[in-house]
Image (cartoon, rainbow, N blue to C red; front, side):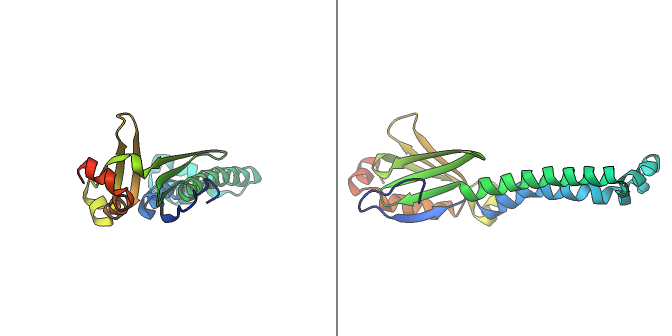
Amino acid sequence: MKEFELEPGEHVVLQVRKHWFLFFIELLPYAILAVIPFALPKLLPLVPPLAPYAESFAFSTPVARAALGVWLLVVWTGAWGAFTKYFLNAWVLTSQRIVNIKQRRFFSREVSSLFLSRIQDVTTDVSGILPSLLGIGNIKAQTAAEDVEFVMHGIPRPEMMRDLILKYVPEEDQKTAGV
């Protein structure tokens, strides 16, 4: 990992990204927006008051083709931004800590870490039919301090991740946490 340095004796146990289905749902609006200019010439004649405008979407003039190009460029840029966030956002579990790598914008990244020795409670939350079927959930790791929470949203198999986190929490901490 270039985003953070591993301590001596520390190793990466697991790296997790948001579930692929949530990424698909984020890309769906961009796919719909990309198809709209090609679907309008076929759909507008079905609505009689809008039928005269169907010819405007034939893209037969240079200005219409340029407008289509700009439209598709904007849609592609938005979809690429969604992919970039999906690919660069990650949660890394090491033998000593959890590292949250969050891409805020194209040139803004936040890396935070929580040492496993500070964890007091790990909670998983899977709510809804689709998340239950696909195994998508959230994990909340809490420290003794009331305001410090580490939340991982939309990860695959959250119970497995919770068990791995608890496996690497030092033994004396598990006894005091009641685990």
